[in-house]
Image 1: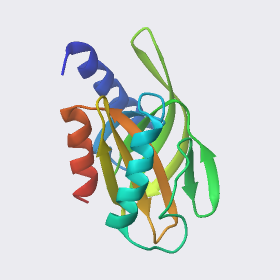
Image 2: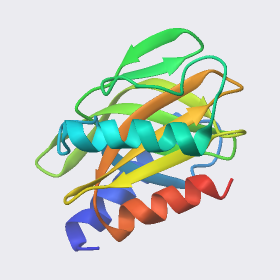
Image 3: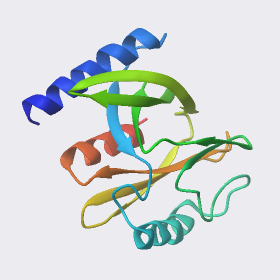
Image 4: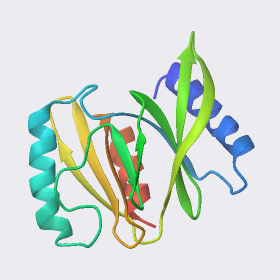
Length: 161
C-alpha cells in the first residue's frame, strides 16, 4: 500500500474506533455496485451465489439491488462510496466524505451481524463484486472494491468469522 492509502486506512481506523463501542478489527473502503463494475458481473454473481448460498428464507437468493442494504425487511440506500468497520460482532457501514485526503464520517447507515454471515464474490476486470448475506437476520447487500490484495484480504477476514 502507498503512503496515501496507509494514511487513509489509519484515519478510518481512528475515526471508527472513536464512533463505536467495540474494538475495530479492520476497515475497508468500498463502492456501491455499478460505480466501477458493470451489470454483467452483478448478474453473474446473483446466479453464482444462488447456487453457492442455496435456497434461503427472507431476502435472497435472487437479485439484490445494487444501491440498497436490506435489513430485516427495511431498505437503506447506499451512497456511491462508503466505509466498512468490522468489530467482533458487527460489520458497521458508514457514509463518508473524502476531501483533499481527509476523511469525515457522515453517519452510520447500517450494521450487519457477523454471526451467520456469508460472502460470495465475482472478480471482474477492474473490481471484485461481493454479495453479503445473513439469512438468519434477513440482512444482505452487494458492493464492490477495486480488484486488489486489499479487497481479497478484507473478504478473507470477513469469511474467517
